[in-house]
Length: 254
Image 1: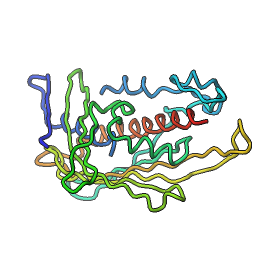
Image 2: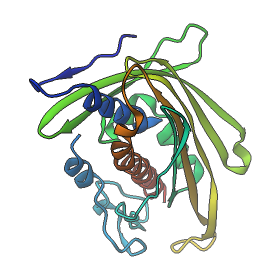
Image 3: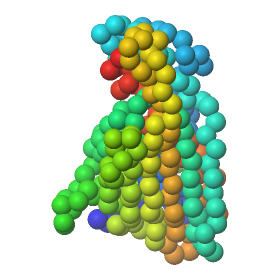
């Protein structure tokens, strides 16, 4: 796959903005404008209030009540470690008010990830030469008023050996990119807590810890330090997007 990149800017340096757009695409799964993203991620501050599910973005349960979606505005610390002269390891995690299977449902819905993650324009499965999972993603970023797009292709490997204990992971490895020489990492999820349901004492409500890590090395002369400001913004947004989507699934099931 040949990565596609375009810019409407004339006389504006393309290298770093396009790299940032590509990073937005890849961190969206493995994932333009920040204001638009935050509007899509808005959730009430009172995360445990009981409210009618039909008010939760159109979803409802048989009882008509569910837990309010937890706030997406909570801070998500991003860890960035230098692993080489022009390489970085980026990681972050978030607690999701949903069971591991609900989070897994969102992460593995490859063809519909763009409906959940604001930085993604396109996410779709592509043919794999040996029958594996190959994912193409295109991201968009708006920087100083100009639109930039970039894309990449990754191979995904789903690991479910510990599914009975709720522990699952998705490893991803870069296949094709005009901007990155390496973009490899993992999504990992595991049960975090369990408590009796507030609406049905015979059932339990679960939370999940969702962890994301990626090792990156840009191609050519793109300096990785120039991308760090974008990474710190996009990784929390993408984690929060998955969190909200999974909590919707959990809300609908209650």
